[in-house]
Image 1 (tube, rainbow over the protein chains, first blue to last red):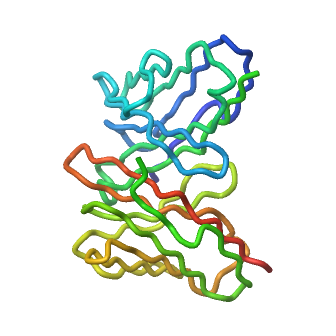
Image 2: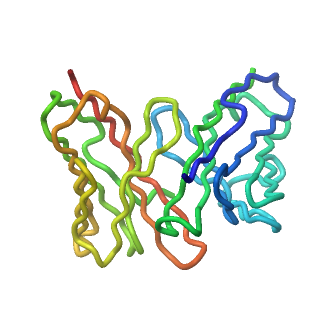
Length: 118
Length: 112
């Protein structure tokens, strides 16, 4: 149980286009999902906390108009990178809490989406 | 901002040996968690230890927590080549909306 999927697994796009990444909890309902960004050989940096039915909470330094987050249902959160630029190229990982299984503090991570902006 | 700092940054051992990885943090915590990440993949939750616990076991994993020293260690016994991965400690502080703060990670290589 507690499986989180991401789609797509990788994407290449031209500079200036927008890219949408989906994060789904497959076998549980997640009221809270998280979006992280990871540069090569570095740690995960939290970008924002996504709450179902309300606005996302962004970390300091993360542009909310650039990284649009929508948590429209208990099993789906989307991250849209708007007007992507080469510096947005990174590995984006989502996670979800499963409030009804295991430790409430445990987050289950998706497999990640590698974004390359040309 | 990063909370945990792991050491060593990289560790290379022979299959069958034990691997010990350490993590230090700065502020008080609710719990500390260890995750594994295979190259280019998502993270897999390994083990969680609460602030009032000192040691936990899960299979070949043993985690200790010393809140007085603000440090934790992850021991993998009888390592296997499949244990090759990056390992991260992450701390949770705060209330109901607490979030994970990750360390920089340790790259473990287990030679067959």
